[in-house]
Length: 264
Image (cartoon, rainbow, N blue to C red; front, side, top):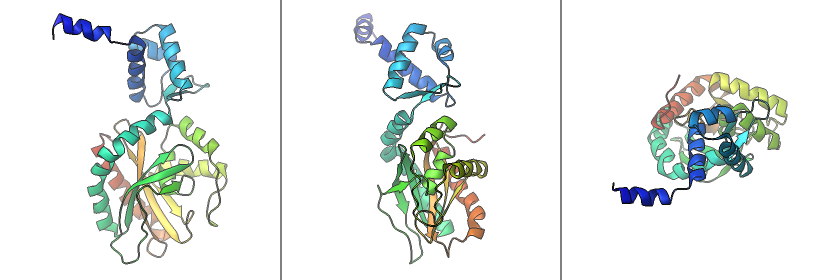
């Protein structure tokens, strides 16, 4: 490239915008967050510039700050923007063969979904059960976070502050006799889900319908989606939950690997 081209390019640079993008890229690689001092050290920018840029991004809800630890992380808004841009292009495309393989092994309907904000999630794709009686939902159908495996399996693996902020805003509406309506109980359940790697819907959203789901991670280990099976309780009884949970988790990790995730 000629000197003239370099000069033209530099004339159009916006230094603070460049610094803001560098901060976002840095935080995308540090999902547990960094302090202001750590960001300044990593990027070698002035404290004044970093402070102003970060506070602007926090004000616009692209970053969030834990006032206890002083750690700064990407917000759900920022992550959701990334997910929305990649949904149609990659997540479904990379998942569909795995979803069909899971359906072929367990014979049940398979769903892929993401969460949107603090109240709902949406179904990106489904592969119908090979049984005559099956649950069918349209792509784009929304689901409740507290009563679905789609919501629970993602929330369980989000950074603690992020999941806690979402739970604080949630209304745990009762849909069946099994719906969890206590936030204390719900938080304890998320801990169990994180330990075992998969979640259950014990007829909590629709009476008589059971689901088993597991998170899908991106290259940074962030839960960007959930994979799950759904069936009438007679075909998916409680005693098979753990056995089939491990199978669903295995397939979810296959999708994660396609997104660049490397299991530790």
